[in-house]
Length: 273
Image (cartoon, rainbow, N blue to C red; front, top):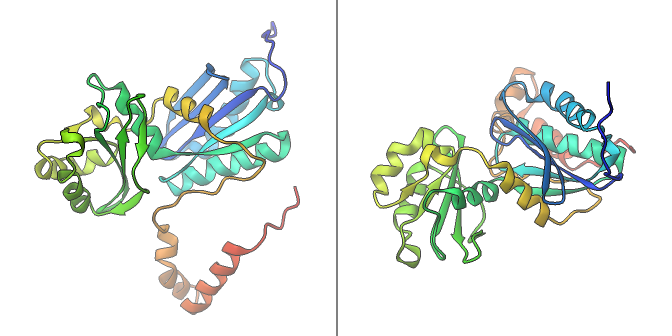
């Protein structure tokens, strides 16, 4: 078999990883040039797909992990399993290749997709990103569209009931323009949002996932360092919420379980790798 010829030197490429909402996205790029991208719509199989997909992506281009010098990983908010998978993979690659890492904001990546609408937002127009968090809750973040064609966050990501998010959007007439609304939360809460916010502009199909080009543009602008990336969790995981019940099933006092969890969360890693 002929070997793929390339002129990439070790440490010259950027790898972008995202699994915040079911869709597993992998991008390999040389600066702004996308060399390869893969998208896997397999929400329950990302753990078994990611490593083989990475190996195939690199070997198919005649590359090795050492060619990756920067790893941009989407840190949330989103699926706990997906975020942990991406950040753990990035941490392992950082230790074995010496690549530097950077964390990307999932809601910002989605907000950039508003610029790909047939009628993009105007400067000063509000863009709301709403993604599914759990039943009766959404991740919400407000952005303001800039003259340069990019969104700027006007506040942090919040965890809101859909009705509260809808009320805020309904009152948002930034620059006298109707707010643009997008994200996976439209699938479950679209009817409520449209009733409360009749003047808002809703993106077709909610723009459920970020475009790979927007993920890459974020990765190009990110700051990289030789550190592991901390996840962005806006809500506690179900296991933490259910800890008293789970502890009782193991005949453990709830306060002892909570103390043990607190110790583990703040303990230094035992590995020296």
